Image 1: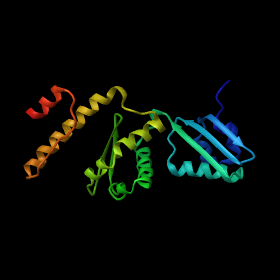
Image 2: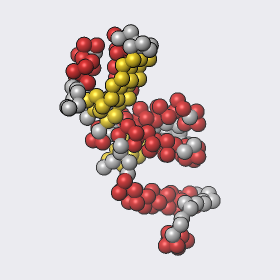
Image 3: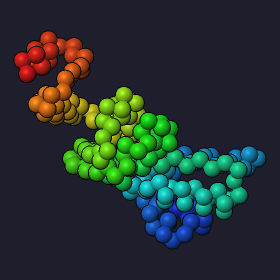
Image 4: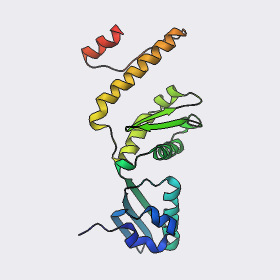
Length: 196
């Protein structure tokens, strides 16, 4: 049985603009409970839909079908991962974790070769790290895009360590005390940092 296209089922309830965004989207799961007036849908999309578009789709279906509950989960292809998606994920995390509020205002985002860099305008790196932001961000990214680092994890860890080493030298040069505590388990890694 072929996977149904989202528009084959729901095109009557969406504007032309929203339909254009969903022309290749498929329905992975769909459950309509008539008694409860609820709809639960999982949608696979090759294109990233920003949070505003997702909200518009949700509201259009909920209103047109006169639903009490409408839960639409969008899953996106790895190829659709983009800066806008990162911003939406961070905005969602800010709603759940008040510690993050303000630090990302005015931040600059860049995404190259699957590596996201965020330059904070107002500082706050330490507070963000303490709030377990990276773990939360990675989990949501994996859930939405199945876009974990996988085989690139070790390469990325080395790049991050190199970056922190460089920054630690800059901090020492301006008189700050720096402690790099990465919980190294291998003797080689401990020696490398000690020699540094």
